[in-house]
Structures are given as structure tokens and as C-alpha cells.
Length: 207
Image (cartoon, rainbow, N blue to C red):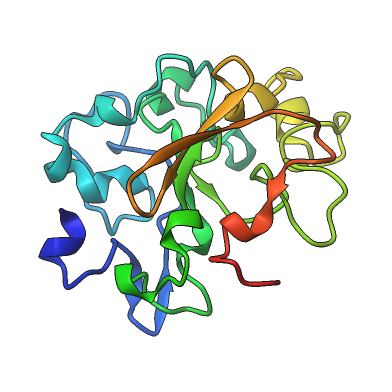
């Protein structure tokens, strides 16, 4: 519906030739505020752009199976983790490729292109923060899991060692995934060294 009203474009930030996708997790400026952020605010969760199209109900983006999602501890924010639990669907950052604005008709394989999925991170950009096994990586979610404290693992360094793997596979080992066409599938967890085909994030394009 949003795209129908906006010349077949999904929401993006910047210009048509230098576009980016939102990259934060907040609906309001702080837990005391009830004013929904402007979608162009750098703190805004991507769902804010579609707020009017889901009945002004941010709970649409709250997965009851989610326990902890990115509360931005690594940039010294200290809001309660519950503040971010309406931001449990991660957006595919590769909806913008080479700076081109995300037009619905620009994708070659929309039925095999991920729009969003169960995720602890509000925008997924590659092998470090998605379940895709991207070139150059030997496992998935390297930014979040499988690293001891002090080596860059967010779960280990900022969340008392919480295993964020299960925020992607939070449905009995399954990751609910929304395709560009609007259909939903699930990916079942196999192994951190397997993941899923990264081409599902890149419209079939090699990186």
C-alpha cells in the first residue's frame, strides 16, 4: 500500500541515486515519549515509515517470541531492552544496491528476495548480522554470536553472553521470512557454518 502511494518505491532515506535504508530501532525519542518519530529521523525504526499503513499499531512489529533485540548498547544507549521490542523484524539492507532507490519493479527475483525477517538487528547488511552465508565468511551472525568478550561479539560484550542466534531462529528453530511479494516462508536452523543462500538478500546477484 505504501509503494502504491509512492510511485512504486519502498521507503528509503536520501535521494533516488544515493539512497539508504533506515538503520535504527526506535519508535519514539525515549521511553517517556509517545510521539512517533519522523521516518527520516536517524533514530527511527524502519517500521515508522509504514505506521499509517498498519492501523497506527506499532505492535504489528512486536514478535511475542522475541526476548532481546538490539538495544544499541554498543553506542552507550541505556534505555530498557523492552523499549526496542516493537522492532523485532529486521529489514534487508540490500533492498538498496549501488545507491539505487528501492523501486518495487526493479527487482529481478522478487519471489526470492527477502524484505524482512525475524532478527535481533533492525537492519541486516551482510554475513555479520544475517543468517545468510556471505562470501568471505565461515559462519553466520559473526557480529552477534560465537565470539568471546573483547573480540567484537555484541552478545558477549554487551548482553552478558546472550546467544542471539535464537533471535533469528526464535520460532522453534525457524526464522520467519517475508519476501518482496508479500508471502512468508520459514528457514530452519541447520548450523552456524551453513546458514542460507546469501543471494536471497541480493536479488540473486553475486557479491
